[in-house]
Length: 330
Image (cartoon, rainbow, N blue to C red; front, side):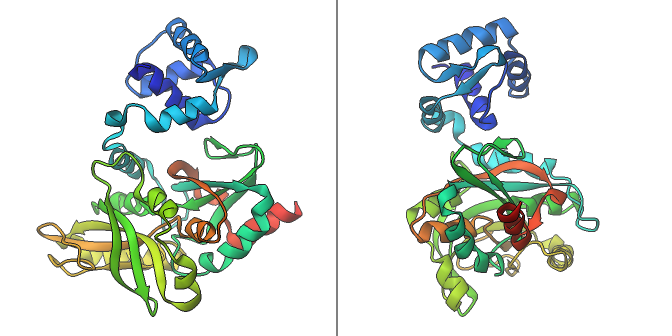
């Protein structure tokens, strides 16, 4: 397994569908790898022999379960700083306009068994009605359908939720730089965030912190929603002190449009929930877009999540109740 083969697997894993050598060559160029179609086919044959990919007639290849496993394990040094690099790239590519509610936003995508649909709807409905989500608008589809450029596996349901990194993009387009520092779990008492109980730095991480924390059992989103006391997923950002007034105005505009959930600002040059900030910086607490999925995991229902998974036109999202109704009664 070399880096070129690993990159091919990453591209196939991203698509989750059959990909031909021409399309693969184009995708590899975007990763800085220039290969002819013939060379790509050579690497694909090697991956076939290793059981990482499987031929699908003349249409191309699909990644196998063995290949998917390799993507999560191989070349960890290649994936150091992967998360922070992805945040920067997606923030730049987000072109959402808060005034017109048009443009691309960033989605997290989660999968769960289609047999658990009614349970998941029951569990997540109160979370989407709470301030602990970025938005109550989602995409909900059956297995075989796509959310952005991600295909939902057969036998599963796919749900796309607004990722909090969308906020970075909105702020960036308004001329306000945002630095993502940590993803973590925040203890909530009486509906008020009190302290971080877990923190993982985005810088140097090969995995999204919130994906890890969902599986760790560290959250109590259900408690925070039902009784105002619990533990939610959230992330800490930093903005320049000089931009605080503009940031507060933009926060209010987002809130009026149903975006952002609970966003809190700290004080200049002072710790945010006991977490230090940089010189001439203000801490900003942003709720995690995966809080509904954390509540599902708390109920013992297995999920698979891909944070910051894809860009999607905002108009494709529906309010939670509408999305559920459309799926159940279509």
